[in-house]
Length: 139
Length: 116
Length: 246
Image (cartoon, rainbow over all chains, first blue to last red):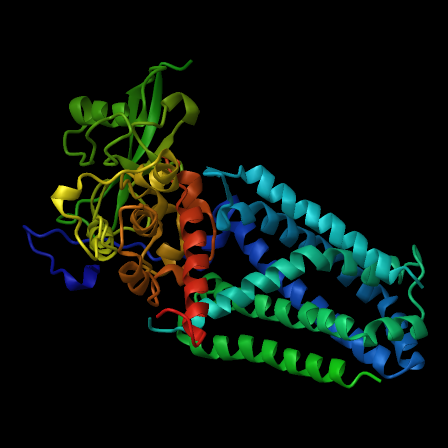
């Protein structure tokens, strides 16, 4: 159904197709927000690798672990982690807000309201974060 | 079905994304900011090692690292494909993304398996 | 309130020009006028050569979808007063081939709609003697929002994936497939799964969510697609298990 397959004649219209610009994602706030949301995955991956690094540092002994901690104190890493935290939080919030769309929970024939499903996710987030803090702050 | 692996990659993306959403903020805040900045005391090596070598902890860390890597791979692949319109490189992008995730997964598996 | 408002309207006459242009018309401003009223004023009083689609003028036929100030809208539901100050940009629906002025070619969607079999599919027909199909309010609830689609194509116009990949089956087609998948009378889920799991089916969607935002009938195609991804993925898992149903 492309313009190239239609021959222009006096009695047959010639369709016009505007090419989508490579900057399409800058053309509206929604589109830009979407791309930023997708880019949160980069920071997720980076922190996964930092965690892997941490595991290896712990495995290689106290000196390696100290070296790891020292590296994380550098301004580069602190700035990087601050930025990463912003993006990861953006991921969490958009993820929980969209969860009700993907999983419809029906109770006795009625669909659970979106806010409740999202709320349950936020609650789980709170509980699990507290558990993580508990394990990591034991010393 | 032309590519039966696609739904499974989407499932990996979903599970990885859920793990990242629920657990990454807390870990990031503590490990990336609170401990280095001295707001809270970082765990000392002996207790951290004792914690991490527990079988359940190893499983947790494996899921924590591997699944979000696949979440990134799936999402980033589509972002490159759609955002930068790199349609002609679609196979290369897929291989690089999932390949990296797989590599990370294998390294994590090895590191966690061989913990002292 | 101003006396008149300007409308900048896309013009495209394939017999005379290679690319679309635009022309600005000054129309009277009335508090209760919608963009469609302004377009009809232009056609009646200012420029009879303007081509555009419309029909019911009350938001149920889906004919008058266009891009108003950059957003896909039904022109019969877009009030002039909400788009002040002028000039108000009226362009054809994005991502569709342009035929003339504000008229786009919708055959791509028509073809895709047919592909998803938007009708009740039965593996065994119920004999007349057994009477009618009965449906509880809850069963109706399960698919009712998806049945409200008026095929206006605003969702396709909002979807960047459709813009980048015209072969993508698209939001409305998937929502309409779900309308039948979730209908208790239907037995065609398996057939539709084959079609929707193809390369240009549901897996192209990256949940941008714009389709749901612009839908004038609150169909929520984005939700329909995400739920279907879960259904299809779970089905995929089941086929992997040795005892799973194929």
